[in-house]
Image (tube, rainbow, N blue to C red; front, side, top):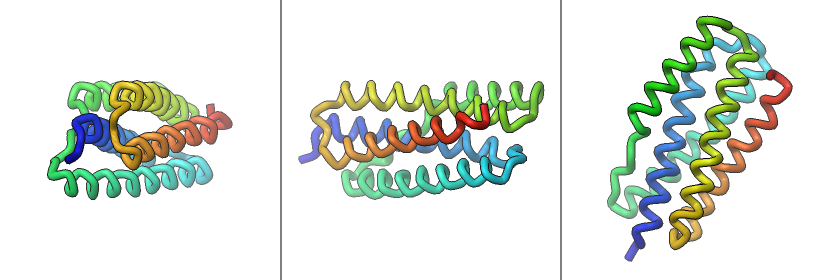
Length: 144
């Protein structure tokens, strides 16, 4: 039997991944620098791989997952579009994505601590997602 922490952590990972993909989709068309575009596209691709992994496990556990919080998604969309309307630059994109990554890293670490009884394979997904976000923050520093 699957424990509750496993499902809850998996849902939070899945939701966070969706939020990340949505944010990357929102800014990719505005990026001017080809290297930055590649960094963001590669990261999106890795998020999509993790998303597929979480969907497979959710299906295996007979759970439908969790949508990204509508309020958080709406606020992110608003912040992104307002800031890019004021300054449509790669620097703004890097700043926005860095902020999003930092929030994701913080949330995922909180959930890892909160759902400590989760199965190791789900904890591993959360850790890989954290590492992906941390790497993106480092990769974006040159664009800030």
